[in-house]
Length: 53
Image (cartoon, rainbow, N blue to C red; front, side, top):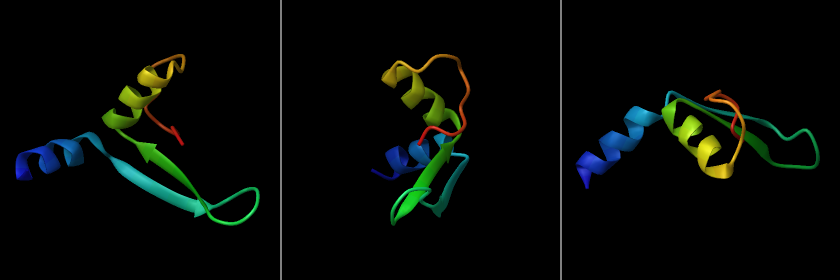
């Protein structure tokens, strides 16, 4: 379990929370290799690893 945690942490460069543009709550921006993998899985174009959500 600890190895899996470390592996996931290595894929995340930074998580940024900002106030939501619309309504209440927060917008989340994920940066790093995991962001790029999620973009590919979601069918997003390009290999930009920033600003997934």
